[in-house]
Image (cartoon, rainbow, N blue to C red; front, side, top):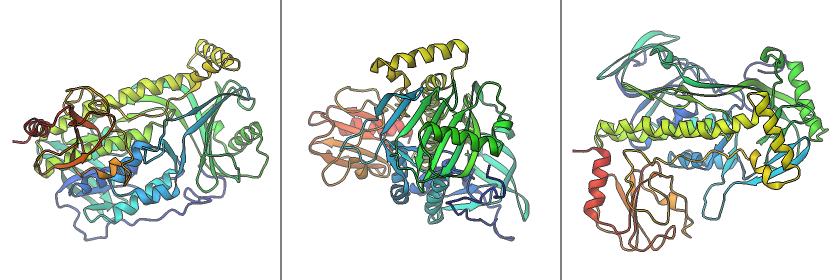
Length: 523
């Protein structure tokens, strides 16, 4: 929502582009290998990941511009690694605000300051703040420059037919209705997914009681990029407030609605202005400010039972909805897009069997359930679902006023990449120093760059000491003198998404090749 007198895309700091529909007479019905419904961040990352491996796709988007408002604003270190892999990184690094620290307050008194793990071995910081408009703009710049991606704006899905050989999408744009055959379809069309509805699917899970107004304001405020959480502040008794700094002097303020306070009433402009001013008074900010945009959300943990339905794969919010606490929503969706992107590309390239695609649901739904387990704890702490839970929460916070250890209860435990320990693509194998099989590899400063910059486009075999003569079209070999404290002779097989597939204390060429072949299900 925007203040009175301003349009949906009339921003104080961002200029929304306009995208035309495909011109009349253009080829709209030729079969495509992959159709991606939804050109938000998740859909664009999927298209760029496919293109990175040489595969074409078509992005289908009903809108004629980017999403309104800043929406998702926190990108994790692992998401920056994805952006790097798909070739979209430079503008993100130039614009986003990195942060490592959060502070929590109870009734005006600080009870916790946490710092997320960081070191000189990490190329990227733990978190970055950037408005979703910029996220979409920077991804679009990469998409627009990629000849393997076609984007059809102002094109709406009206139905779909699926079968063993693919799908037929029923689409309409200003020139009329038409059908598009696609071998595979990615549903990246968000929480109200048309594709999900067209297939008669429903998200299942838990709805939390807590509802929040999120408001963006522009003001000159010199507080550093530190996430602030206010519990039971004077401005929202019994509630919770979150404050984040964004680029361009934009500040995100989230405040919890009181019990019985209707969303319709709370999102009136005068109510939002009063709510924001109360928060600013609470933190001692007396300067002028301008209201940019606002919305309302509730905390839910909802997901599909299966993320694949025939030739259709659900990614991002079309597959799952998670609470924002711990900034897990968008980051989880980008990992979905990367995961299915490289797997589909290898299958389409004839470098892997279709059995590889069976690993998508167990890996990414497993990641969702892990997010649910962690985010639900945060959600119950941030928005206690009952009087008894609130009483216990406030008692813990009261303890934190006297005992520092109790303040850790207010630590949101930010999003961490999921370990695919039980994946069919993970060889449990041998233990030892370094990442566990299935985990996202930690970066390392090699002196002349970082480890993640040395990874090949497909799989990478890292050996400590002399590299064995391993030849495979999908494999890049890298020999290092030392890494992660592992003994000389160790070998690590790393996937295209930088998760560790297997590790060995010694590099046996036959074992390495047979492991890779089994994972790809190649003849």
